[in-house]
Length: 343
Image 1 (cartoon, one colour):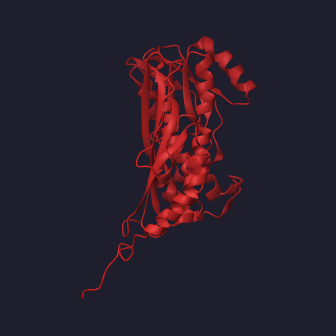
Image 2 (spheres, helix red, strand yellow; image 1 turned 90 degrees about the vertical axis):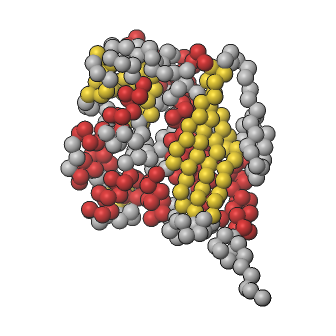
Image 3 (cartoon, one colour; image 1 turned 120 degrees about the vertical axis):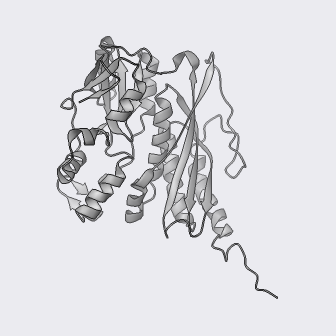
């Protein structure tokens, strides 16, 4: 008789998968909201919409990953923060159209499943969901031997939110004279890491555990700082003020993301001296000898979310946010010209 070969012999350990789900469950349970009808492990995540107060409810969806920032997590063997990044990249995007996030699903792909590592990842996802006031209602963990390096994985996810049709933010009402206000980022967020890794690790040969006086912390801690989730502060603003446009500053920086909300004939003029630039960006600029346009075409430079408003809204919004302990900066204006950004 020929020797029997099992799924486990091929590199897939089903028992480890069951163990991982058990460890994830407490984190998932902590994100439950009244609309959640299903349990972890169901074939599909069930969510009951509460449509009270909506005239024409519209669902808004967004999907994203964490990108090569994951390489920093592998280097540091710290996996409970990148899930926050995953939620942030999706929830902040749907927020830009005025939507309130409802629920989130994640996907973890790995070569060999480590139940402790997977649980740490989901711990971060759950924390991000709680910050975004949405429920983690399901996901998928895929074990694919030979597809990933040992100890490595990839993350992806998607978020679904809801907004009334007449409250959708598209940027169509933006006009010359409007003001751009910026909410600070928590650092690099989750983009530009291919350049960051090449600069710090390949060119400068700096280790993640190395303390850098310019940053006031180890390089790894600064790089792994989670992406800020803007859901609560933006939803507070939307309840009280007229917001014409929202731009989440991710990959492509200012140069690519701001034009996504500008009508034809409108150009954004940014005063780069109007807000503080975190030291990580200054260090990147110095070590990489990067020009200003390259920096603002790659990174958020300290501003993670941009709000476009009528000039009369600037003072009330500023006072409202400052009373809540939030920082906000008037970073530029909308003028006439070809759609784009001028620094």
